[in-house]
Image (cartoon, rainbow, N blue to C red; front, side, top):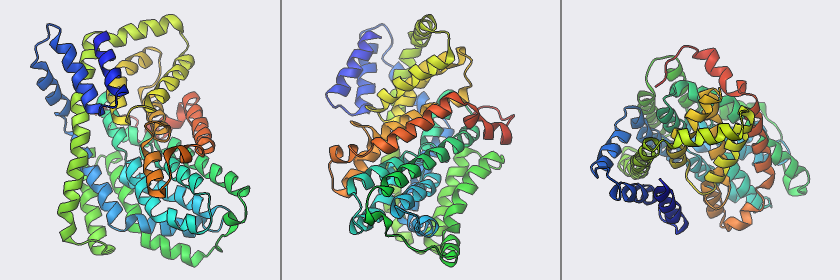
Length: 430
């Protein structure tokens, strides 16, 4: 296994794509050992042979429909009416819109791109600090993996044999607390930011009602997806397919932002994104199999048990490890590699697997705004036409408050388990 990890780290260091780093390091280990080379294709196939994983292309397609179908615009219009009268209004609008997009797209990068393209121009016009604005938009993107439905949650639940419905519910309270933390960061920054941040609009109940009615079709989407799964009406994969159907109906017939001619190009884009995710899952499956076959989880578990018998200390160490990994690796890849290693250890410490899974997702979502990987940081910086270094200097305040919510969830498992235990107490994994 030393060869595997050295090869993997070397490939990551020289900038190789994660799919090649995973595949090549695993194939090299298999080649120089007595393991039949055919195991590579077998494990790649086994990693993708899951009905649940079929939900990923549908969720990706649904997110693209939301982005191009005018749904993001309606969510932002409602957010403006809701919080546009408060100091730092556009910053708060971006966060509220991030909640709405997170509950639809399931992808932090997609929601960041959609909101940034609409909001940053107006922020620049009003004289907002564009670096902090981009940092804030990147921070709002971290809500995507935590607030359901979430592509990362689907992968985690599949990998750890958890109920996807319970995993979705587990992310709601921590996700909303993260959103509140980001909004507090907005308000604190705006209060000392000068007159530009006090250029607020007056509150209008009529406007709020009008924009809410216009956004109702958009808000129905997460209700259908999560509600259907929780109620046992359909599986997560069926829910994702229904999300696509509902999204097309809303975008074509209700908002009339796209026509049938736009569907092929959106399908191709969804297919290309999904193919990239599937290749990562396939190669990571080989890598994870090697880790398990060499008894790595048990070895690391024994070392940790020798170092500490306190589950809180273990969780703190795990948080530091995952935040570090999230700085260099995309979240889905990190889940596929680390969950098989860390989950058995967490269970041996008496930690609830669902609580552990939610904390993992929160850690990896923080990785989306921490350089050098920081995918939402890159997206927001690109749209703002600023360098990542310029934007990352302003990420400290929202990052610190999000980290505080991570610590709160780590020490109070009920934040992750309360809603699943309330609504789905007897649901079997899967």
